[in-house]
Image (cartoon, rainbow, N blue to C red; front, top):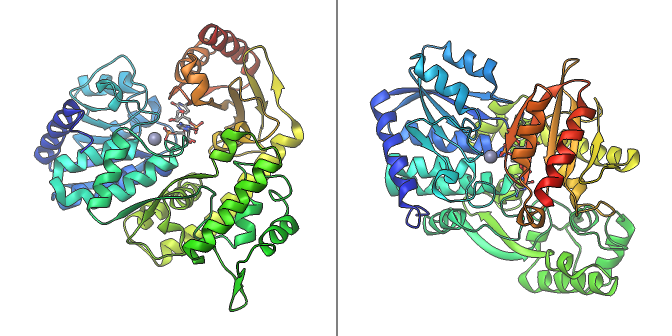
Length: 469
Ligand code: C5P
Ligand code: C5P
Ligand code: ZN
């Protein structure tokens, strides 16, 4: 697979797989977002198929305390997915003490320490922010454990990559693209060029257009009457049996009609060319899932998963990934309604309260108004929304507790090309105020002591200035 261009990654995966087989029993620890959940689901399925016993646990953030908790369990081998690389110094200390042997399948910027079973694209020249996700790393491991029989897991790996915004440039590429190819060959995925709006499977047509937040189309975005009016002028039936149709209910011709009209409208209303291009992109369909459900589309599936794990219900998301289409799916859908409301209220809060501009970055402090587990998503949505300067990164604060503040940072691929590395910014600025952080060049985070936000900002502003200067 992806490992053809990167044989070292496959070799490392094979060594990890051998160790897991010898261990016979492992503790699987993963992160609480869509990528973390799908990583765990891919790993869990591969372990089960290989006859390796396991127990799965999820952590909001893998810090020294959580690693110590893991070390206190009876497991001799711990498989970390979607985190672990950034915390390798702490993990390696426990390994030296003989607490456990770590196997790490991750894609975050590694700390300085090393360990034998460390599977991370960044160690082999593959970009962990855009070419392979945590679920992708878990997939490489799954392929090493079970060979071609595990190609069906490519669908979940793609949900993870899309959930980590690795397709935000329009499509997946690099090692991710090889995983897509394997999923297509295995019959679990389809790659289609289509309208790139969120909700093609489940949203009523007018809502699909009204809620298009990535590309603002004057007269349509945020306007129910505008969306209905626009659609009514086209030669397309909007309802069927009294119900609004969804995008996937339309015939290919009808989709073409709507997409072309939408592009025309965007162009005539002066939407910038790069935004208009973003209206159409590559979409990833899970062919084994029922049409018209969140599970059918990688992007909608990933949001459904974020709606569980980021609200302390990783068990629900994992069950859905593992095939529960009854009580877990129903529960997940309730959580999704709540998550969507939180995201739109969060974004509105940021728009009302405003964003403060420093020399080299911009920031907002949501306090307790936005949950710390979703403030990063809101920050990412804010960078994409109109009126927000895409020329500097955005930093968001949210309160974790009286003692601790969560920081989320988001940049753009253009800024990364210009030298921005937010994982370094978060790492260095948080260390300077007694906190800890890391992540990716384009998206990173930290935890810092409460009340030291200003000081943190000063450091971050200076470091970003150095990187972009
Ligand atoms: O912990 P993890 O790596 O899974 O988190 C990745 C986060 O970074 C996601 O929430 C995603 O929104 C963000 N990201 C991004 N743009 C990218 C890559 C990641 O906004 N190109
Ligand atoms: O939480 P958020 O989505 O903003 O996280 C963005 C990235 O920063 C993720 O990849 C996450 O794992 C990383 N992060 C970190 N240390 C923290 C918080 C976040 O490495 N304390
Ligand atoms: Zn990830």
